Image 1: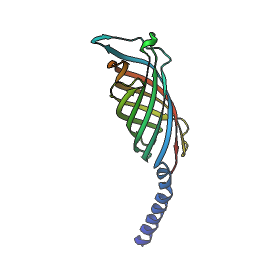
Image 2: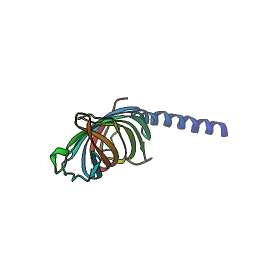
Image 3: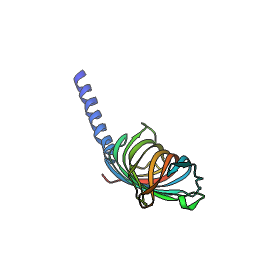
Image 4: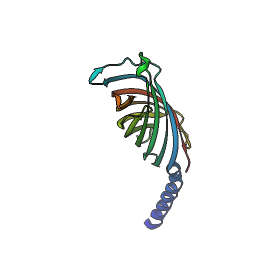
Length: 188
């Protein structure tokens, strides 16, 4: 008598897993982007041996795009970010481009996701290639299976070279805080 009960339980379990798997598999490849606001930073600029702290303006902003492979709870991919950094002295303004490897993990049974990323950084006034590393947390506000609307907080350390003339550069080095709003679309 035990064998038919076990067979029924095994069949029901297999059916439940079969129909539960597509909700995880649907997010194997996703693309997305975000707008970022970078209002605060603890940073130092260096030029010709002199160091000084620039005064960041509240309207430093940017945008990014990403492509991720993986499942709901763990995915890996790349992110390209473009950020315009503005200061009270407009001569110090620069635009930074980051080309990052991006690792993302979700907290089970919640809509909270954590990310880590790192890669090379350049300014549009190219001098040399620098680097950046960042981390953050995002919350999916919708909870829909094919579309995520994310609100997040992040921090980034970067070391960027900004060309100021022939064979001359300024270095921006520091830690930044940012607020992000973005979306991810699951493709398959």
